[in-house]
Image (cartoon, rainbow, N blue to C red; front, top):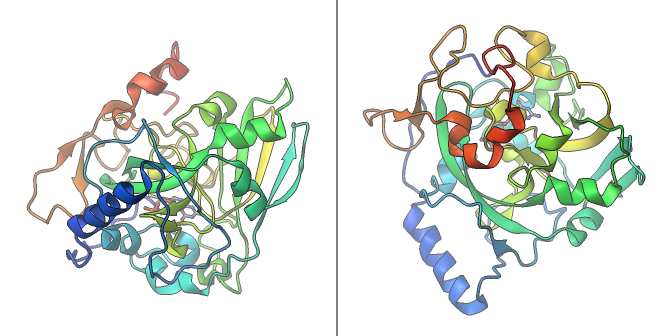
Length: 313
Ligand code: MTE
């Protein structure tokens, strides 16, 4: 669970940032702002990334190494250890993949992932991901705004929330054969949060399709909320008028709220959220002070005007 601490893994600089940045500059030089790439890394390819542009919403912080991003993960379907997803997620098959979109929208249906991605403007979005366990890393995602997908299916006027569901396939997701979480993993957002331009559906990172351990072939990324909101390997999206149930809130409602906005002033009942350990910075590096809304307040604070965020955490 997000609250279960495990001993630190050892990090290495096997894939240094500079190698990736150099490569990126070469490609940017060749193709202007539109980048495309084919890195040799074993990931299932249900998605053709084609070209993508750079986003104005990216942080200018340096991304973590590809190795950090792909080897230190939470993906409980493959185990609760940080290295379990990179060890076991290769069992997941992601091609073909479809996403069922149902509930309060004009165009419900089961859509092939290729069909969705072809219609969406892809961008690279470099975001800091802040986990509820008080660590963070910076990830160069490739994705599209969830708003684009929702506009495509046209929410009905009464829709107020969006619910998400992960694949349930115990044959391939080994920890789903156990009962330590109530599978499938589920999450939800308020519709205005889902429509905020910062909220993306990621289908790639570091210039290639999503590695399985990061939630292939399509996952949510909500950068101003704790990482557990960013549900992976999504097969179902529902528009609804009632607040969706969410996995961690059901397990421990006093520890994990529906909103889960990054908030240094509201401690988790078992630890402070005032600062975070920066993955890849080394064991003795200073902790980084955590910022309200993970630093994205100018884009999202107004969503919560008039709400007491110590009660609706
Ligand atoms: N989605 C599913 N389906 N299962 C999970 O266990 N873990 C969450 C989130 N999405 C999780 C999930 C948590 S706790 C975090 S911190 C992020 O994924 C981690 O994303 P990353 O592996 O890309 O860093």
